[in-house]
Image 1 (tube, rainbow, N blue to C red):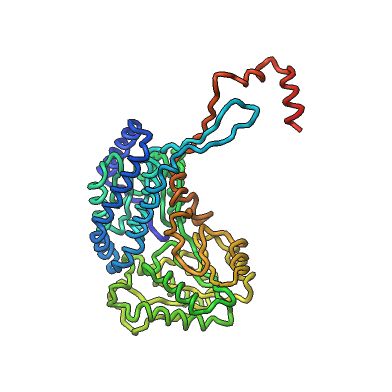
Image 2 (tube, rainbow, N blue to C red):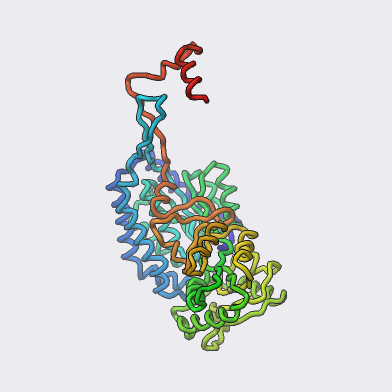
Length: 480
């Protein structure tokens, strides 16, 4: 997702305060390195209560930060999935924490082997502006389930939301357990340079590279949730009304400011205009008016608004045909909202086909065979999500087997992200590592292999001097 990393000199007081909290959490972890299941469950339950108590304040703050963000979108995308993720983890922590039994090789018997899951320590979470609560709470759930402590760095683009989230966390946890850091200029760079036990970053691929470089100095392991250009492929036989409606929802939810939003459509050439008609009709049903509609989200700030307009202008200058979807024919002058625009006849020379769009623009490209569509996807960086629309299983299997993406959905968009029993993460330029559910617990735990030997020491039979009967037996029968 697009985000600009602040490189200006930060306030020294902010830096020292961040270091103070980090040291406080490190010391607290050393005193209590292995919280039991009951404590972890209690932490998650307190987080859930805080979210429920502050849900209306959060919705109001996000609405203020965006200029307009539907309360329903905030509840559906931020509060509800966060609460579901907390409940899912809380019910399974005891099972996840149990050491897993492994089998030692018979040459090492008598012995037994176990894998113990230990907390890592202090985890840093860098949160983007587009879903400032869900993308803070999502990693935090895994961090707390695994028994860690956390510092959360919020975005400078969402100051109102940051204030509410900080108040919620301060009322829920001691700062030596969970703390929120605001979006001061330059703070993100310094935050990345702390010697975390793990660092989670959600944002653009470009900024992700900076974060990874900063983390490398401390050999900090990172989970990078990035973005990229997630394709939506319309199969050769799916009813267009089904595909277009679901693509429209995924594109316009949060005004396209979603890392897994459909970034472009690959459509069978013969039904290109059918897609335009069906998409426009779906938009008209969901948003009969847009400019004054409180359910139609705004662009987060003027800088992002201008960036999107530059993409449109560049595409037009290079030959794209723009189809504006504006059901009520409204004037958007003077507000940070814009109609959806379909971009036809696009090519890879256009910036809109090179950058993640992160807004209400949707390029539509024609293909003649499914092989051709798959080849186009594979000729470009691996996306965070891929969407395929087709009720023919063999076609869906072909696309899934022959493409790589962080995640995928057949016959829908977006909804895989909120599935707690599936990992979420990117691949290649769209990210590394994964979290959610059990995978989140594992990401924020150290899986420590332990071999237990009894009093009887079978190992002494291979001690020097070498060349005895036991050595000859082992070499003869186990090195074939």
